[in-house]
Image 1 (tube, helix red, strand yellow):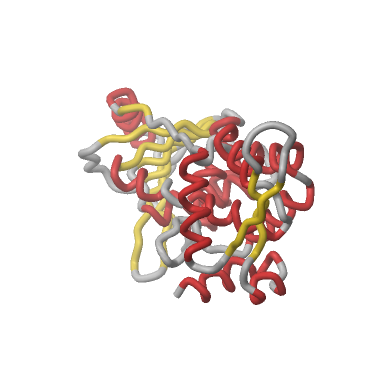
Image 2: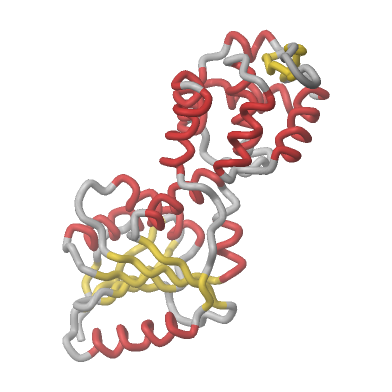
Length: 272
């Protein structure tokens, strides 16, 4: 059985695998970085993608999917019938990429990940059978994050093209969207972009609940938090029947002057 080196980064390795155009691909016991790299590579790959079954540690996958940037792109792959997710609590296999004609072991050393590949005609079917068994025994993983394409489409149609463009620019400028100090979460970004465009709180929170980002109550609590921190403000807008609604607006001159691509960085600077 021979083995050859297939790239020295997960992105390079996946690019080689995708270029080979397999019908199916198993991604078994990947690291958090490998999951993120797969989602990024699959999202940006321009050719046909294999039907991929990703089997990961349950807690690790949940942690990775707490990042809206990763989860919303993952949801796109799922909706396009490219990806299926399952989890297990006691995965003991090495990190592997398995197709019907080769097995790639992902070996990490320092900041590099090598892909050691074999196409041995006797070994590959055995490995494929083993990971198929793992898959059959695993639990289905339900991702509740909405697909980013649906988020963009509904923002454009239900709020405005300007808000959708600003939301996209803000998200593109962020490395993570967890709300853990390293990145704002998706609710905060939605409210900041809405405030930049003077959108009604009712409209953005209804959109957010309908598309599956968060409940109206979560939007309301986050709005109050951002008000208390001096990032946004509101003004009452009378309506024909019922209580006046609240129009969102940015409260800090630094945010008002910032282009969308800098809005997240400026907001995090204010919050620190």
